[in-house]
Length: 407
Image 1: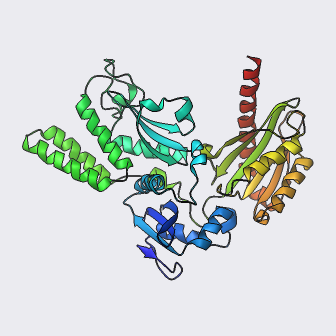
Image 2 (image 1 turned 90 degrees about the vertical axis):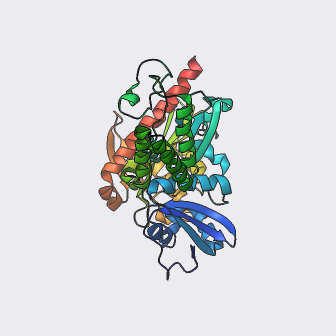
């Protein structure tokens, strides 16, 4: 479908994938729980703060929108990743940032494992020679985890268990492993499961169902009714995907989810200074958006938290493709609050981003919150939650770096 006048036309209130285009060139691909809500959200007044200047530039270039409906949110998620990988749209996150994204890989083994892996770990933790298929990137790890749970209920697969160990793993006992560990499935039959998973992650559900239907009918003719019945149930599950868990990730209009970014600095008397950022969206942490910063500036070897904080903020906001926060939470006092407020105000969209700072007592417990009183009242619990999480996050990061130096 093609949409030329967004305000006068009606998009379907159904899941799917949408394409902003300039002529025949795809500028941006996104997924939606509701195509109508999501596409219209790009034309709200707060687009700069919710989407960022990069997306605003994309909208200035786009002259039409196309979309493709899907039967479920899960299929929209998978189709989006497949199409981004294929088309590499200019305004989707570029490959250099994909290292922080998640991927699904299938290993090269007699009984391949299906694993969720962060892009940067493909180099350090997994030998590329041992990878058969790769799907993604997927930006949100929690969302992908929920998606894999749904897929695994339809097509049980191996992830951790040892093949032919003679002992059923826990996932086998609850029906999420087809019996690789206990020797209940042949390599040939397991290879069929992997082919089914590949077709599904390639966004080829129609082709998958057609192939499975053909196999089901063949088994029925051979009077292998138990196997035919199993495939029939899988086809039914594919046509009636229950992806309620994924709907909580819906991000539309006033409800992209209030985004809080919290920052903290850690060091030992100015040595090995690091910064951390955590993200809370709609009251839930999104760990796929967490970021670690190794301080590089002139203050890296002295305890100057304001200068180090400013460096972290400048590096974070040098990424226009990262959606801007609604609220920035700083760990510190008046000096940190002032430096953060001054820098945020200097940004083109700075007036749309609120800043607060959590001050601490001598035991490093929250003592007071500086900033807009209305925002503090409305998001008091979330502010303290985010502040506590970023402190934990950055302290752990600093401790690991410090310990590695000692060793």
